[in-house]
Length: 206
Image: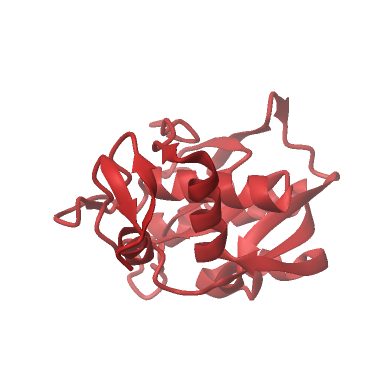
């Protein structure tokens, strides 16, 4: 666990834990998971990747990244799966992510905001349920309801965990590897990494 994996050019922390001390909002975009989702998407060759919203782990400070630092943020050897989902199903996944965090029913709150790579979306949390997602773009194009997109998700989401039952509609399902090893190898190949700009999930007030 003391082996050096690479270097961090910036702090790499989860939004819900700033350096493991200050709790943040459940609906926040997470710099660490933006990075990890980018790694998964690039490694699997999928058009987009999804990670569940999580709140554990101490942020990685700028400087050397040890295997222990990385394992602290990725403690489980979750498998990743690739599948194909329609744009309509993907929109429903995003609606469920908002419901998971915006609902006032404590029995229905689960996890945090889903974390994404390969797409951007805006939403209004106070809108009527199933009408909260506004714009969704993949690259520079609007999400197409009928098109089937290749997506990568961890085992929890693939099995419909956190109420994400729409992932169970995925076709051409294939196991693609383990998250920790994917991220570790990706960082080792690059030497130095930084947290991406948090600009993928936009909350609007109206």
